[in-house]
Image (cartoon, helix red, strand yellow):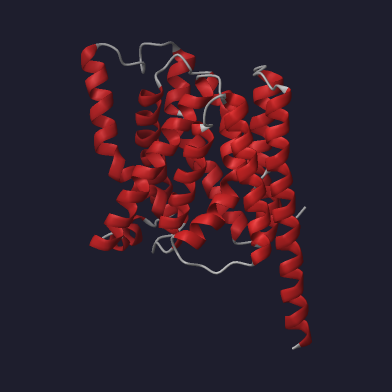
Length: 296
């Protein structure tokens, strides 16, 4: 197997089984888990930079006001995304969190049109329209807007939009984002400890270990993804990206027995249809481009 494909599979599998990890510490408030995630992720990423001897280069690359503003905004989006994701999983909404990452690629296209004024093929409006119908149907059948899925899809979409033109690579970018958040995150953990409501050191060896290990759990999939992106085509990554929400969906239904009614099945099926149409349209379009290049 191509190493790039292997790295991508490992990254998406790790992202896909995140719900099982967060469920193990669901007694810890989502806000506290979020604070731990930023603190231990920064420390782990900082260690990675030290081992790779890239800390001096990283330090020089962030001495720019524009860079700091970009990544502060990105860090805020990431914080909202992580918080809603962790809360959604531990509150019993794994299926809905998976929906957010199913529709995220279509949200990316929509944001590109609305924010970056990108011109897209008319045929791409077909899957976007189908997905919109699916969301509307789920809203009606739920009796409420599937806000968890929409918040996850749009915060991650805007996060991608912000980092699209950002100057740093994925490793440096996430290190800076976690560094920006480490002061408020550390302050929150100190305050919890002062009040006697902190979990670390007071919840048993297993929970303590899982809280400390959120750093590697956050960084390792990212490093694998970064390695994969350098070795395989983006089209292959685009196909494999659906592995993570698929695993999350299956875990929610089969492992944690979240309700998946006929109405939800219909709504999800509409969105899955949109993704199939989106993938086929993208594949055919890329094929036409490749043929044109070969003939020229």
